[in-house]
Length: 306
Image (cartoon, rainbow, N blue to C red; front, side, top):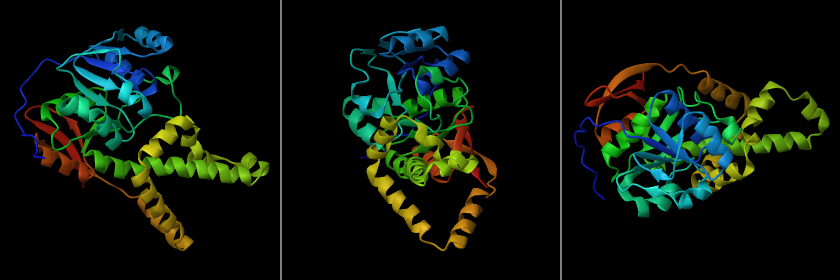
């Protein structure tokens, strides 16, 4: 499949944003956009979530236009738009924690209108009671650039992420899933193993548990259905990443501790860069560990490690 052309993007009115699913992530996004003065609407099957969002200034509607954000659990992606009216020109994105399965699910029906996304934020809490308008501030937001992604649509979604204080990391769906297997899927599995092993050690161990145990097990306080869908939806990359962890545990302990300490305490600077509105350049930025932070003109501002 040939790359989509990198065309100049003209100045256009800021499109409205409609968020489907008003729990922690979707509700926080809608609240942040409303606080920033962006036109934002939303829908949720839960009337309590709709009422909570409306109280934060979100218009409740089934009519979807502009940038439509699917903030629903992975198993619900395929049916998230059922019963709703989607404008034919709308750009659709999602906040799912894996990208290849979502692309395979939504790509056939949405085609180039779909731009996969995943903000790297959230807590072990869930539901509309966990909404936080500052949730995305400083977060990395992975945004997929596939060979057929329409760059103007990608930019519209990127502008939504930037509007709530996130930094945009251009990736492909496959690259995203490989990366998050190591830094998200495996930590959830390790947290589950650590919590279970500590319980097996007896009540004294749990009574003495303090900071390091709490930090190591925090994420497994998330909804088990959410965690299971995340790791099973990314099973191949997660299995490979878990094998790398097992290999590390077989190293001599002093060597392993020293290596891990070096990674955790490394100092990584930032150097500002300008990135052209072109797929290869954007993906090179993401692969280098950089991110997009703004779009002042016919280029994007960002940074790279250095």
